[in-house]
Amino acid sequence: MTVVQIANLALRHLGVTISIGALADFTKEAKACNDWFDVARDLVTSDREWTFSTKRAELTLVPGVTPQDYSYAYTVPSEVLHVFRISDGVRVKTVEQSFPFRLELNAAGEARYLLTDNDVCTIVYSVSMGGREALLPADFVIAFTYRLASLMCVQLMGSGSVAQAEKLEAAYFRMLSRAGARDMGQGQPDVPPVSEFEAARL
Image (cartoon, rainbow, N blue to C red; front, side):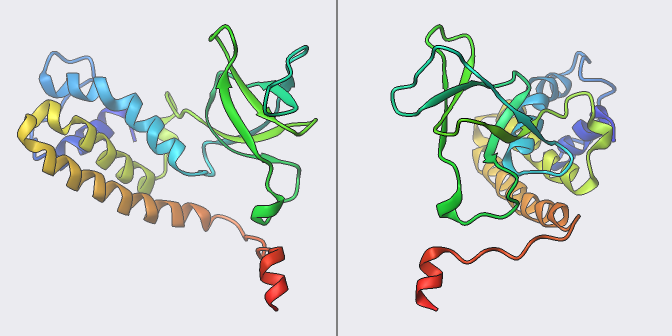
């Protein structure tokens, strides 16, 4: 589906019946779509570990930097939207086996660091689907259109439309759950391991 088609579907959620021909059109509807399209797309992409927008990368250790609360600092690639977790190749972990980490800016405020106690760091993260909207699954697109509509609502419909924006946001989360469930179905998951606390009760 194209950018314009997605934008027009979002406008339909707002009761707008006219269609835009491009985000660069000189109409208030096109301007609102242009203002919020990328923001909405990246928010939805970051909300779940989607199969089509998730990547892995081994990060580069920052030499000579020792964080105050962690042992190591790594440079975060600029394409990273959201870091979901640190991976060591074990597909399924209990909470106790996960690796703590934190993201923050470096001292110069010009790059993001990932701080952790791992001496090797491979992250699982989301990337923007900007320019690749045609690859987005239909159920993701539906959720996306509701998110976009909720963000555009007040700009297009006025300050009295806050309640409508909240309803659209609620609809987004419902569709997000459905789209996420379908996306997770693309593969055979492992059986979750039993945590130490659960094992003690057996």
